[in-house]
Image (cartoon, rainbow, N blue to C red):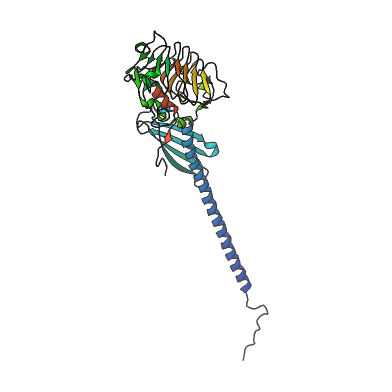
Length: 389
């Protein structure tokens, strides 16, 4: 007997729609999971890169901040191989930086900066950078109490070429050999206008008077081995010009226990008190701007490097410690005193005068300390910066 024939339902094969739907859901789920996985990975990578970059910026900030607050007077006290650590903590903003400054030799320093940033997927990131810097060691090409490219008229106390350390500067090395009292192009350029001030009395040094063509060479007044006149004036100098209101007296200015270096009348503190004053280590670069301008200093004292485009007149009892370099001419009146060296190019002619009890006393200590403390460190010429992981 032949079985009855069963007809398939009109909808086709049984269960195929459900299988297709489930398959589609699985595929869509896999795609969504892939999107979430990829997005999560992108988030991790992006967040970690952001935190790494923050750590790198923190390390760079540490180097720049340490250079901005650099004090040669402190760094020169470090022994060779000695270190100084500075911490910049900004954990509330997600970063912290530790700077270690190591003295490598007499003039070279290695600044290592380790920046740490927080908040990444993996917790934190650290980057380290380093910078090699050196302190400039400029020097005057002619060593003398007074070097002049024109006439020098003496009616004052002796100009002294004996190397003399300033009074109360207890950290000066032993004085060096004596230098010339006056250096000029020709011996006839020195004029003794008083009978009681002949050469043997008004010039003290070895030799007393030196005539050399170097006195008219402009490089003598512009190039200082490791620096130049224009280069020094660009190093954040304290500027005086025709629009400046020159104080009647200069002296240290202390605000809240710290040396106020922005005060116009503050040119450092050469007095060396006990206890030490806050401005004793402040040796500014002072620039008198303008070839036609005459800078007149009347009272008080200062230390550092004094650079004058035009003429310089010391009319009162002002005392300065360090090198004084004048492109024009110089006039010393009353009881003006310079401890260090005076160099006058006389580029526009004219005579240099020393009247009353004004004088110059050569001091290698004052010159070296001014150069060593006033000039900020500079990067070494090649491969100064590096990133250390």
